[in-house]
Length: 231
Ligand code: ADE
Image (cartoon, rainbow, N blue to C red):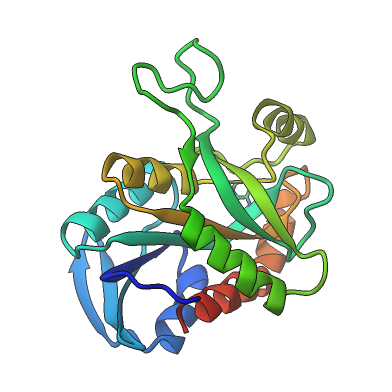
């Protein structure tokens, strides 16, 4: 089972989340746009474009639209770290998205409901998800792989109270700041997507310290899984 797209777009918020991927896939060419670099190259006859979009939903949305419109990407994969919103999902565990929600969307129609849209729940592509599950099971230690809803908002979550609210409201496994925006833009463009996140913190009162000290190790897990999917 391999990927067969015209051009795969890879998007991460931070340098630390993307640098190894660009190096290992040898994406040696680059083009500047949106105050960042879009790296590209060919990996096993598969064209790949990778971009560090910056933090938050707007940066993520702009870069995703650029990947699709300007680079012709027909599939988008988002990688990076996240805060856990489920006690079974621990540091360095990997979460594959089934569906994405914008947890900070509030039009007084219920949390996460985007007014006047036909859906507020953005479903991951089954083919991408199946491949990631297959590779993840082979690659990751027993119990490290989780599959379920991911929430995103323009907020670094660092309180147990908020984490519990996210879990109860959306059934989320983890929270981050870009995935749902990427999913939303992919939905608008009818482009398949998947979000792959490893856990750097428990989104509680220690989240910032844990994020700083654990993100580099956590990133290794998403990088390894993405490389297994593409390689
Ligand atoms: N990314 C990593 N940890 C996070 C958290 N606790 N909240 C939001 N985004 C994150």
